[in-house]
Image (tube, rainbow, N blue to C red; front, side, top):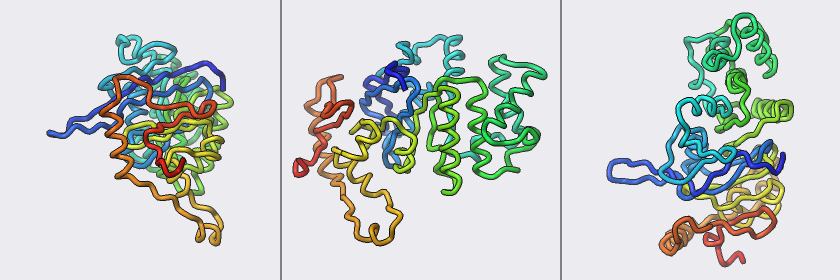
Length: 311
């Protein structure tokens, strides 16, 4: 990891209109991602993690705010520039079953991006596909098979090979292990770590599994109801969580010792009180004012959410 910023997300908002209701999936989120790091994004279902990832990818247009890659706003790119951007940025999807076209062979799935960007043709194209398969722990003969012939873990490896095919700089890993067996999850995460070192990749790693996020991430952001409530280096967040929501999440991590787990005290999160604090804060909050406060070096917390009893 370097001190060079690859992505800057500034006051990002993404709202969805559902009839007469406005769903604020992402509401004023600001953070950055360094080149070569893995930025973990955690939070419960519905917190806005995937919406952030898809907006960074350009799949969603933000309601307001900016997503800058190397200082350039990706949502203001021209069509030719968008094609080059999508070569640099790829995604590994949550569901290894639904994300692969069942009518295409593995070779064609991996080679589709190569063809779109005109990277290789003929023999070199086939050699590149074989190289990618071996890179993710599969064999050359798998290129002629169809997705239904593989296990979930193998399909996710195919998805990883597809993401790597056009030599990207940045990959959004959208809960890439949540649909896999526990015995396979560590293998896939270790593969991602290995590939990152070899290819000098940058990851946004979205996940529910907090113990796995700790294993892979350099820094971690915690989201709640569309807001970023805490950002810190991985070891600092797990050693000294400050926001009550972060404390509650970490206390829910199971301990692989039945006696310790049985006697462990679970920290409860007062959602109603926190929601009231949040709405009061928003009522007094000026446009684009900073929400997160740096309480330690590179440790940012939304203190308006903090339970005063914990101070």
